[in-house]
Image 1 (cartoon, rainbow, N blue to C red):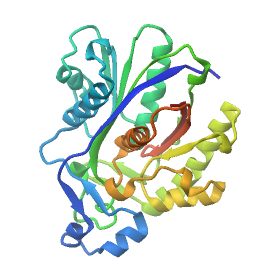
Image 2 (cartoon, one colour; image 1 turned 90 degrees about the vertical axis):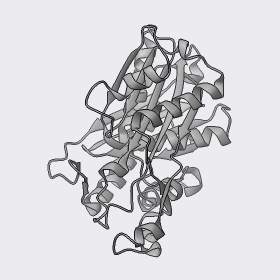
Image 3 (cartoon, rainbow, N blue to C red; image 1 turned 60 degrees about the horizontal axis):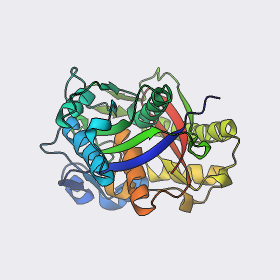
Image 4 (cartoon, one colour; image 1 turned 90 degrees about the horizontal axis):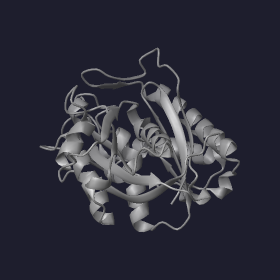
Length: 310
């Protein structure tokens, strides 16, 4: 298995100031705080009122650059994972490049792999950095899901929020920085999770699918990396539903304490979910040779995992 070596330089996040609480949703649809918390684990979620996906992506990227005192002039690859980009073209990544003031040769493009998008983007960037053609890369997940949420659908409107997360990486020569990836998709032929005008979802089917593929993705990447689950310091799953994470924890006999969870505060932010969570973890736990396993799943159905060392 090809194992690119990447060094994490920094991470960043951006969450809009405005929020939608469960009490706010009680005024919109037939629901209540107790029902939402018991079934999803979500208490509040952030809402972009004036920020676009590119603006949030830029602010997350800038936070990562500023944190490391890293010049945008050293970035020559930008990948943005999003399903709610500003427009069809130019890409959200192109707009981020402009906002960062990068005028030198820089490859920038978007990918759409739904909630697995950041993990897909990280693998793409890692392989591209391994080519030695790029000095550093920004991988960003940015979503404005409230713009495609139907606030008359009580089953879906409680789930989604807005935000962005970014990871700044560079190639490494150290074996301790070997990264592992497993990414794939299972065609969603029955439209269990789609976004046309609004998000449409068969919650039961998505739940069963998610628990199965998260477990499978973790087992597959551990096998590829020749590691046991005990060798992983923390697991960062896509923050879709607390009950999904709890079910995986139970099925795999992995303590919940090893899962980094922030869904209570942000809800499901799709491609931004994992990088926001990763950024918060790295802020609280400065890099110290810890193995982090990230695992995502989303519409498509896409799913995948990655193991990196902080």
